[in-house]
Image 1: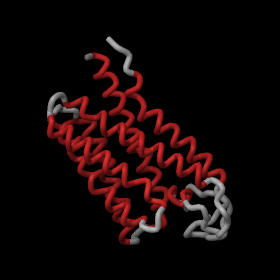
Image 2: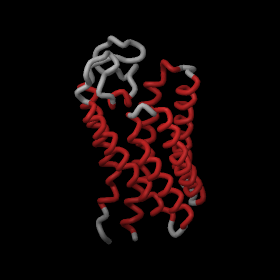
Image 3: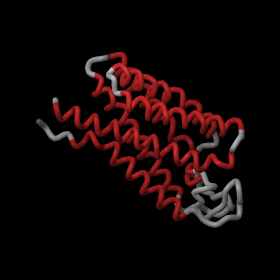
Length: 205
């Protein structure tokens, strides 16, 4: 039995992302849509993508944007590795492997462009293959009778849907910064769980 600790790379990437974003948030000068003149980063009012801008919402230079960009790139790489590894759990199903790996990696290749002026378009383009990868993964888990993973994953997908609804309609927009962070936390928990199962499955082979 070989040690396959490298399969835990996504979890390490997630943790590194959180650490770098905490640093970037600490460096953020201030300002948000709710209060452009506020000081510092507000968990209640700032979106995490605001940390990617060289200029803060209050007009000051944002010294932490490179840290945030590094965190974003690291996250996308970690997620690309995650989507590439997930099919290990599904045996020899070639269709699942192609769909999950292809759609997942394409989604992560698009996501780093969130900091561009085409923010809304990037969200849409990244979401389409991302949701495809998620739905294919849910189907594979359902066929394998991994119902708890399906339920938690469906909860993640539901929260992503609520985020998009609020973002595009404007209803309840005041709650979106907190909802965004809660959704991210739940998704990372689900993905870390799946990563751990991939690791355990690979060690048994």
